[in-house]
Image (cartoon, rainbow, N blue to C red; front, side, top):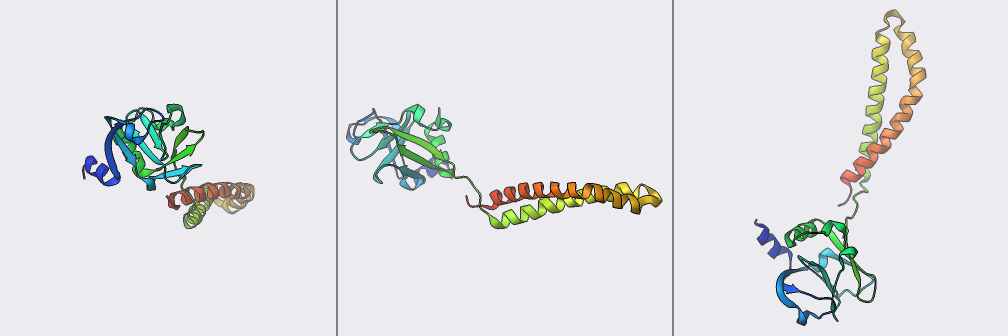
Length: 190
């Protein structure tokens, strides 16, 4: 499917506009391509549910029903700097945008990255895998080294296990935690 087809399906309204701060929608100068970001892709904070978020090549605009306000560049997430309309559309496909009212007519637009995590099964599998691999590698090295000592192998094996066993266990706890975090993030909710 072409990018233009995706944009028509994704965005409920596509029209031309360029807005100055504090103008109403009726006063918009129709000279620049502007998109209305769908309501389900926008999280509104400290404001009415009726507010709408627009974007054109110059930045974001918020219409709260009474007036349309330009969102200043320093109040937007740096990831949006210099992006064209198509780049913003692709970003909105993957993430939600969070709009926060920070003044009478001042707004802040951030990317709601929604950190992944919370997969308990993935955490368990990752933890056990990390612990098992650490024990496997550590004890295999001890076995190989002690086998190289010939007839003293049983005594060498016992001495090396007594010396490095607690260290291997401590390392396995750390790798279990790291594996658990990696597994939980990989399998958690998007």
